[in-house]
Length: 394
Image (cartoon, rainbow, N blue to C red; front, side):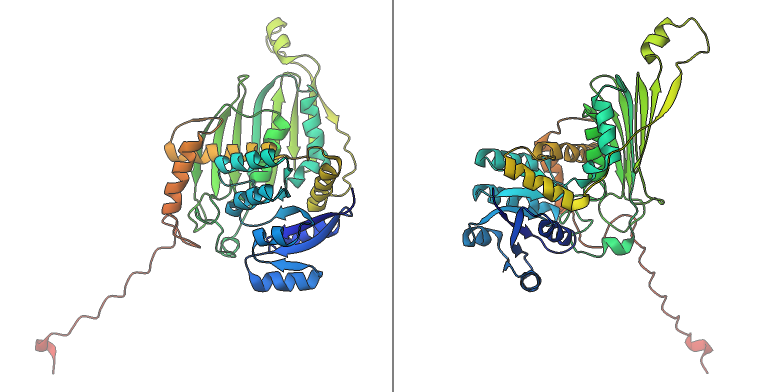
């Protein structure tokens, strides 16, 4: 296959990374940009020497050479654009998260299946050598039966960050807080490395530090089908930043901190040792191993665009399909639903229940930089000076 015509929809913020990655992928020909901001679209198109549009449907009709698009808009717009692209026979690479609700993700996946087009999602951290190796260790059975999982995802943000765009940190504009914006990569890596989704989640989400209407901190307990238990913590209220994944099994323990991977291999299977030893205070010996990591190669959005092109060129699945990307959203939706109902939530999430909840939350959305909780108290009105009595007047 020759050059594949591609367009980028949404050109500010992370859209700039998409534009650069499209230019840095030899198999793609950047043919157009699209943004609802006409002035920004025109300026970007002029800068790059490509056509500029404000309507993606018009773009599809105007240029049949556009065979693929990347979507870098706010979350709520991913599904309608992706579905319109499928109807036009155009392949899609969507920024994370795939959608705000799992029901919308379902519709995106169904549309591309029907059209026989590719739906890929930007989860570039999967290509980091330490994370890929962690996934490989678990998938190979090196840990044996998994007994416990843990994710800590601390990704600090300031109030200025949240105020930088009108759609941020609102139910109407973003559909969630840390779970929909900062933690999707962590949630994706967590379930991908573990190799399994939990069957039930009990969570609490809070707005602890920022004047926003969505969550900036989330905690959850997870239960898996095999009896394993997990703990998940995501927050924009903590420094230093931290990304930590632990998985403990019958044959070993894996600890991933950023790009540092440690693996302890047990010399005897834990369950077998527990059942057969006659020594009161003994335990299986654990030996920490140095894990060899591969070369990183091309990383970031460019790596994702290279993979997207490979998938289209070879008519094979991308590294992260729509179904793959839906898993992290399933976790996020389950946590928000559990917190709002005060009850454990079974997975897959009840689509109707979550859509109804989101409808209610959107109805209460009061907009940018506002919240009914943790907002700054209004200053008390100044007391009016007391009038002097006539008796004291001279």
